[in-house]
Image (cartoon, rainbow, N blue to C red):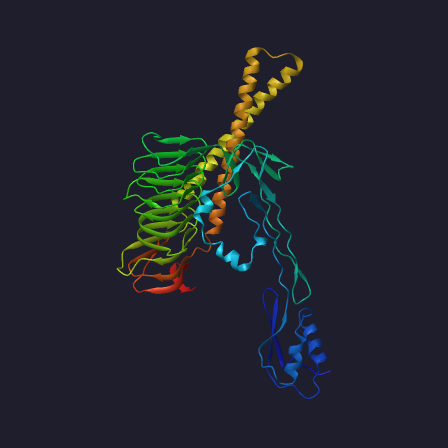
Length: 460
């Protein structure tokens, strides 16, 4: 047996998934593949050995250092998610079609289908288990199983199949939030909003088949869809807002959505959104705040002037312009996210306290009813308690959904990036929290990120 310890050094990675061989002296004649395999086994390496590289090493073809063994990494399970009836089955599309689906079709998001009572609007898709791997020592390496997801009852919906299926309780239109699916009644305006329609405040979705002029207010518990344009008006939605022909606000009005905003362009607009903001053409001299991602890379995809703030990052074709118009970009966890978390914690605590108190009262009346008939006043009281109990339970669901959404946002902001697919121009200020970087020269196809208290950039 030839002693190889003075000729070979083995370096094993900390995770024991890779071993590198370094040859410190030439092999004497007679060294065989079996000699090296035995040496590797004595070094604790029994799995994932590249035997073909040993043959080449003995012949003097391979140079060291070389990777002599590699383990098989575990595959993490996929997290569970909520499927809604608005989702498409990606398995039906080719890779090219999937790539093109990233381009937002405003006509498609405007025309959301209606549902009828009893129709399935959502399903819980279960997570998958991890597939274990093996390190070079032959030991099993466990992966992370996918996380469970809870399908919660939204407005005008009910759960079936032990919480796995969500169906509509009324005829209406679907409104999808990150973790909750609602079905709302629909208020239709067949044309422009005007003095005849007046301001609109509706408990469901609002669908406007024309435009919204300056000075009008539209409030909806669900989604707002505008097939035309919006001027300096006030739009406020508990769900999402979709505007087909863009916003020209001349610095006035406000577009505020609890969920996402999708539109073709923003010109001197004021926007706040709890979810992602997607603009297909341009954002000009506007103030945009989103707790999600700001996407502006379809078609022209330019941001120029004003300020944009995106908690979870930004993806644009161009920022600034050839005239070096000052433009400010802010990314990272905002004060509004922290305030939302605080408000939902308070709502959850209040709901849990109310449920506990109402539960005690209801139990007393139920026990009394078993012994004697309730009086008319007690029956009324029992009905009121049941109604209050249902409201408190709904508030608990809303609060928990809000906390889950905030948690997702906070987890998603690491690492945050500002992607510029084409050009970022001078006079653009990029802020990551308290850190700022002013762009002084033109850059093309770069990604900005925060690294050890310094804003850096790298090619895409």
